[in-house]
Image (spheres, rainbow, N blue to C red):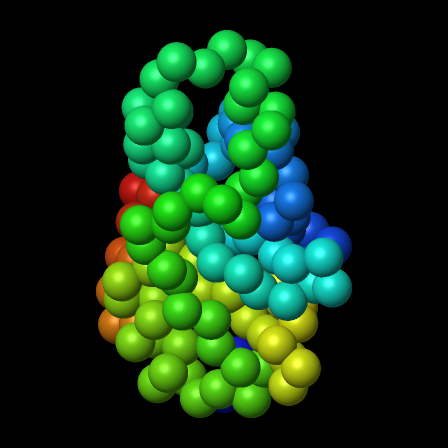
Length: 153
């Protein structure tokens, strides 16, 4: 199976740019209610992934700041605790699943390392459930229940 089946394209992904300020990053994460977001370079390459924790540690380490000061800090200068490894657009399902095991989303890049979108672990789990024995059992149970209701109605 091609991993692009699960891709959420870049145009539908909320992301930060490396030159965003700490304040812009905080506001965008708050607006979208995300605790983790991909970071892209100016030319659209995948830079890394930033978390709320990364922002909090930066604030803690720069405690003498006010709101004007955090406008001077760029996202690219914040230490990233977790690096969400991207997969190449031609990656196998096995590579995708290995990454999704430890990451709640997997960034997808093209041959030039440009970010083209992401695959959410939730979508993979949903697909696997839909194609599992559990889904078949749920469908069969629903059919039996429906049949009983018709017979005893």
